[in-house]
Length: 193
Image (cartoon, rainbow, N blue to C red; front, side, top):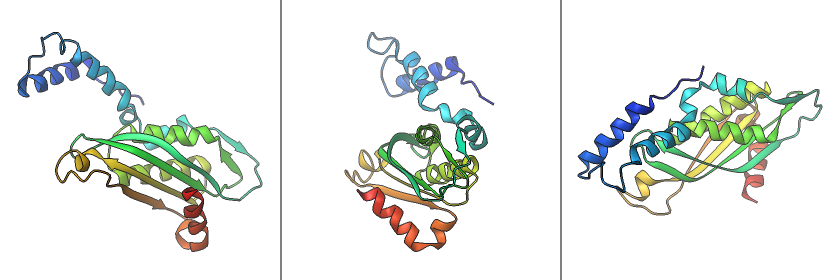
């Protein structure tokens, strides 16, 4: 069930933040900023309106009676998200998704849409992996899913330690990918190229 954001409350909160930072939200450069930010939040946090089950239903577009049980990979899916600890941007993020079909395959663009929707939440990178894996598992009716996400976190690169260029890599490994090391290594070698 889609939940609507309260645009007016978000605008007022942004006005308060601008004021508390020491600026005037009524000056010409900022007067429309609260409305722009509220509209931006409506877009970039769209995934917060949906559960994983709802996202699975939304992108459940599969081709059935597929006899192949060979590895399917979509790599380098670019997304961004916001860290739930600092509301800081996680950027230069790439998702790599692999699965073994179980008599059906998902439309490839739907994998990218699932990654995008999951990232449009206040998130932890580890949860992004787990959520994508859970949704792919539900849609494809397969336990054999692997997801790797890599990205940079502005809460670490622009503040605090300021470790520019540091990348975080996380994974969710399910089914055969957890037990079959050759299969897992095949996935890792294919996403490197």
